[in-house]
Amino acid sequence: MTVALILLRSTLRGQRISIALMSVGLLAFAVLMSATFEAFGVATLELMESMPSGFQSLLKAATGGGSAAMNYMAIGYRHPVPMIITAGFVVAASSGAMAKEIERGSIFLLLSRPVPRLHLMAAKFASMAIGLVAFQAFILLGTWIGATAYGLEGMDYGTVTLIMLNGLFLGLAVSGITFPISAISSDGGRAISLSAGILVVLFFVDFLAGTWSAVEVVGPISPFHYYDPVSVVNSGSVSALHLGVLAAFTVGGLTLAGIAFNRRDIP
Amino acid sequence: MSSSTPVIDAAGLTKAFGKFKAVDSLDLTVGAGELFGFLGPNGAGKTTTILVIAGFLRPTAGRLSVFGLDSWNDSVAIKRRLGFLPDLSSLYTNLTGDELLSFLGALQGGDVSRRRYELCDALELAQADLARRIKGYSHGMKRKLAIVQALQHDPDLLVMDEPTQGLDPLIQQSFFSLLRAARERGTTIFFSSHVLSEVEELCERVGIIRQGRLVAVERVEDLRTRRRRRAHVRFRSTPPADLQIDGVEIVSRDGQNWELKVGADLGPLLKELARHDLDDLTLERPGLEDIFLEYYSDSSTPNSESDERLREEAPRANEVSGE
Image (cartoon, rainbow over the protein chains, first blue to last red):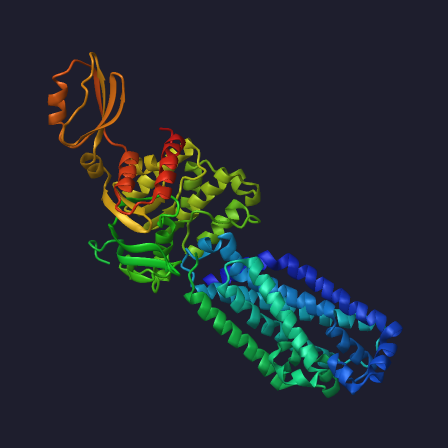
């Protein structure tokens, strides 16, 4: 087994409980969304449609295609609960990747072996990516369980899968921001707080850009700008541009992280 | 690497953090199979030097090669032959001792299980202990585990930072035996310490570092020979008012009991003392502690704070090691 695979297995082992708990939580959230459709779904969609179009775009809830159930679920996928769980996991996993290992001194045990630093980073990234795939898979599973159990009509699982793909790319793009912070930091707590702070700012940049024309131009700097489940439902496809930009966030960020981690001192 | 190539070869090695030079223009070679002690008080630059050797820090200036390879650019190749015991490290406390050693052994490559069990036996780490999670280990047990991980793959070079911290005296002796056995197999050992007695007991050569600068590299034996001995004199009759002898310094006088420092040539002192009626005369070979303090107090750059700390630490270090 290669060094990177040994590290991946070990990292996954350390994260398995948190991945499992968060996956179950996301599954439960998706089931709950289906369960609440009958009670709130139509009223929620009517409320959204009655809002000015600017406000609809602010909430990324400008419905216009697909079934009512699909639109309701799509709005749910951008709910703060799944967004915070996913972003929180990415922040914790990426700061734990390097900064926390340095902070607690365990990096000296790992990197005193013939382990290239980039292999360590790659293993940490792969472990986090596996967690994100699990999250999206459990949201999809929860959606199917809930929709089946509560008899939601007009569900299109091909489109839901595309939304999950969009969500996966968003999670990876977030890691493109948090990994470089972890790569240059020697303090896990500081890496977490800095990463979380930057993500909150980027989330609000996207939020404000949807409503305030003066800052509209800065909207595209936020990765959250490129995650829009309702528009996927409306068009029946996910924007290749959006996926491309999110992929660029990931590749660019990881490249920076790799360069920084490979060159830095580990004191 | 030819047999004459030093295992560690530093030339003008400097490591700075901003304007602060933690290691300054260090020149040092350590040959194959040598047991080398690196001495200095806390903050002198020992750990920084060790982290540069182990490829964690990049030299700011100068050059450091290990096995003839560049310590920074070829660090992965060097680590195939390196055993490293850091000063302080976390040991993944959710793993059992056995899991941690297997994990680190797998990263090193090769089968290390047989050697691991020999080391655990020598350090009295029982199988039952290894099956427990590390979070329940005492500090001493964690230290033993850290020693096993550094030695289990039979490295060609063993680099250790303050390796005996937290070990009781009996285990310390077992550990020293392991080091001597490793050295007999040809392992080069470089370790830092401020416990002078253990360096004196183990090492052939010693480097003394102060404020990032190497102030001496000598054989322990040469240091002792060259440096001044301590003489304890008890006069039977009234002692002389003074002793004016080249190379002899009166350290203390308490009635008939005098303590002197004497250079390599004892002749003039003995000639002078022969003129007096003595009750007792004992000569002590200088301990490394004396030599160490002398190097610190001799320096042209005064550093009263670290000298003071050193004086405080030296007797404690001897207490720990049972002197």
